[in-house]
Image (tube, rainbow, N blue to C red; front, side, top):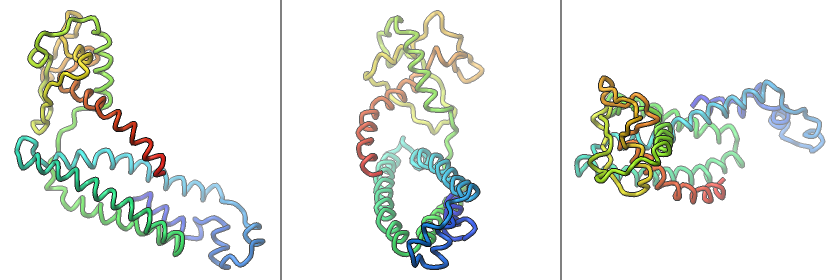
Length: 257
């Protein structure tokens, strides 16, 4: 929201606008010679613009990966109504996201191009402010799942442990004999064992050179780069399964941008 506010100020306040924009505001852009004589943007004005983009990038990177799983956490996957709620939430999330993208690509850009850049930036800034107010208004009602570390780091640990144990014998009954741990939160659903990408199962096999399991920390291994839980392995498998879908989305986003 701070980034959108600063970006709106760059288009509305003359002290933040470039000299070219200032002269066009005062004189209405009557002649081409006048615009050619205008100086470029100063370092201070460029710094303010870059600061607004920095806030927007950081805010977007913090909101988009977290909003979807945070919404799913509000449903109980152990009940039938909770599972239906999760499916409905996914559908409505992407439906509203698509409608918002279409609306902004058409309406907001039209306002910026034909009415005013200031109004075109102010509209999404106002909508962002309204969304923040609505979000924090329900802060006392949300279900909060205790975090268990960085997910991407967990995937790397599974790969490293599987490579280190590539010569270890495969278990006869993987679903029953692989290493498991307790979750930090009782709200986390334990993923079932799947027989895809079975080479990653080696990361959960307990061998002689594995570090001792620390019972004081909830049964977690002392060296998490040598021994991973079945949950971590299944999470890594989920990432591998969606890689093909993610790769195909690159074509769409390149065309969209």
